[in-house]
Length: 280
Figure 1: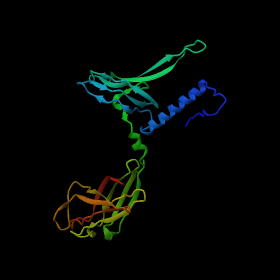
Figure 2: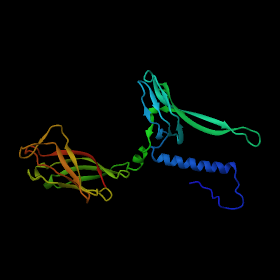
Figure 3: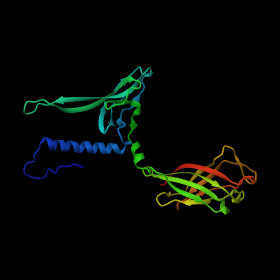
Figure 4: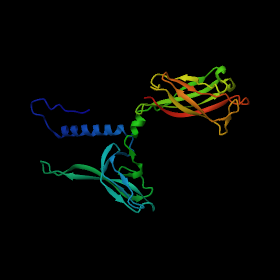
């Protein structure tokens, strides 16, 4: 972070270079903080305000606010448009202004720079550029927190249990969202020896795998696995049809599925699961 130590005696040499250094210091800081909550890149990010209302058919009103675009913070001035929907769409249009100052040598360069924006109606299909983009393209600030603070790639563990406990095979995928402190777990498991599961009504939870430290909930978590075919599965005593299976992850990280012994004609079946679990 750029700073200047103003405590040294001797007469600080205030020049345009030092003022520019100070200006760049806060510009860089604001941009860095803003980018934390964006998804990165040039896409427009709504920072604050800009509440949208619809006063009448084909009309949009947008309140004062701020957005980040191409790495710059831009102030939005409350404005509205009408007649939308007939070959026109609502665009955010940026206007750059430049005010002059009179220098000691008598020159008047345009050095007071500003950018503000309003909403305007432009023809549908108008290409996005540095000075206008679709209002609907604004992404709320905070999306980047979710993207930047969760694992981008899935971790995986292969499952293979003994035939005596169902001969289950498959792969479990998992990753963590550090902001929400949640675990996303998904996968497909197939019980190749389903007739070896405990007979009804003595169905039990069977251990599939153990998750590593950091992916373990503070309390026992339960979720549902689903029989992957559209048809239903009859249990081994013909009492009811099976479609869903209780699953859980305990505080030791062990992942269980409450497999049920199927009708004698079914030698194997599979389950899908895709759940988000709180680790708090």
